[in-house]
Amino acid sequence: MDIRPDETIADAIRRAATLLTLSGIDEPLRDSRLLAGAALGAGQATLIARETTRIGQDASSVFSRLVRRRMNREPVSRILGQHGFWKDELLIAPGVLDPRADTETLVEAVLDYVPERLLSTPAILDLGTGSGAILCALLREFPKAAALGIDVSPAACALARRNLERLKLTDRAEIREGGWEDFNEGKWNIIVSNPPYIESGEISALDPEVRLWDPATALDGGPDGLGAYRSLAPLVSNLLAPGGLVFLEVGFNQSETVPHILAMAGLLVKEVRRDLGGNPRVVIAAA
Image 1 (cartoon, helix red, strand yellow):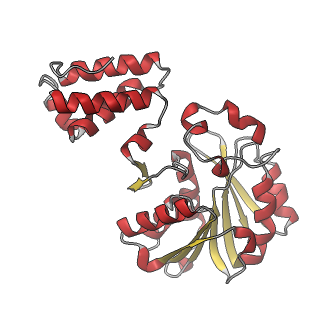
Image 2 (cartoon, rainbow, N blue to C red):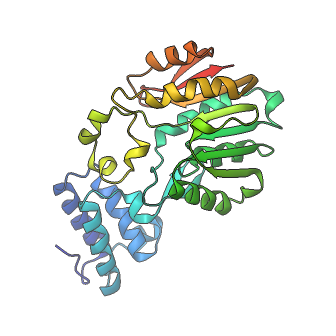
């Protein structure tokens, strides 16, 4: 059911929220307001101020199309083409993982662990950089750092470069296309990664917003979800500078197995950091 042009903005948002509720959307009113803002080219404060104004023909048509996309379980961030992460709005694109708020736990862990003496000159390596979300956040926090992001996906590399350019960080970062298995250059103070860690058999049970829209290569960690960590552990052990630290995002049920894999590669596990939901999220280890 399309939004009518003679409806007020407030009524259009309420009806869109009803449609999204019937489609099983978790936060229908929030999503409706965001999509209405996109259709009208207006911020949330403007929507409130104009809520008794008729939405009009052009905006109602655009809003209807956006609502239909969300009813098909396309994430709002993908509809809008951007997603807030850390302190910035990052561009997102088809074929690239949509960054999650839980991944900000990794950024917070780096800021907590990196000693003051490294703040001026850390060298940061991001293995499987995706959209560049982690890399961009860390470069913002370490204004003198240099960084390298590696990803096997051409689409991810292109998007990461766009985000670095958008945030004016390209002078301190390089994005390189390729698999991390073949990388063996330099010594790094900080290594970060959000690798695929979902068990192959669990992919089909994920929410449609993830299963239908995120690339399987960024989700599928193999039969037990640990394939990427087995690959990363010896690589990271070789690449860390003396005193360097590695920060790996993990699944909620991997807080014992991933530390064991890292320890077997000669790394000293320091902590498993929990996210705001209380789930184990980041394993921190040292050379």
